[in-house]
Image (tube, one colour):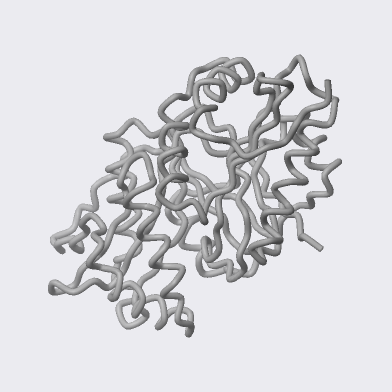
Amino acid sequence: MDATVRPLTAADFEAVVALDARIGGSVRRGYFEKRLHAALRRPRRHFQVAAAAGDRLIGFVLARKAGGEYGDPEGAVVLEAFGVDPAGRHRGAGRRMLARLEELARERDISALVTQAHWREHGILRFLDAAHFELAPRRILERPVQRLPVDDTDTAPPLVRNLRDGDLEALVRIDERITGQDRGDYLRRKVDEVLHESAIQVSLVAEDDGFPVGFAMARVDFGDFGHLGACASLDTIGVDPRFARHGFAGALVAQMIENLAALHVERLETEVAPDAFELQRFLHRSDFAPSQRVAFRKVLA
């Protein structure tokens, strides 16, 4: 029987958890609960597609709208989770779900799909190749979450605290000084996402004399892109240029690593444009190295 492609609904939840466990060998109920809650909160931001054979769920796609992460100015749909019943593969269900996702993206004037895969996940790589994805012009960098050595100096470290809703206006001003652009819409969405949709709140603000001068926004979702271990994604980091080279960026990363280690998160990763040389140097000094995962992109005609 050919698969029918339809919207994924809350009633599919148990079937999605069970199917994902059959595919990956572990139960990720908490991850899917968080994605369902996020989709119910912001339905225009999320894309969730199902494939069914009669009454039986045989495939699912979870994706979300993005744009602005890692300094990327374009809007895109991030393909976060994808699965097809092993017994029903090679019958077009995955291809039809992806085609529907592309239709939904075009309806919202979104120009690209993006995702990640480990270079040894040969089945996924073949699927992405057949679907005409290409290597994205970005590098994925990562570092293990291990507490950093304490700096043996007499200088007090910068104050770093958790991000709050009330920080948005200050973050917009800092970001505009860095980029020369007003990215208020992106930052408003990102603050909402990291505070209310991430499994754990790990985003931070650095202060000088009580005023925000830098920020780092990250998510911990326990399952995006097939991650089976706990992995955090550093989406955005910025320091007011007037306070550059005063240790604020390093303090943000160090505190984030400290918090993630206490939560038993295993890795922190980010994506970097090839020409972001200063950011790459900073990340290298912070012990980031090339990941075994690869970023992919498909431009929608």
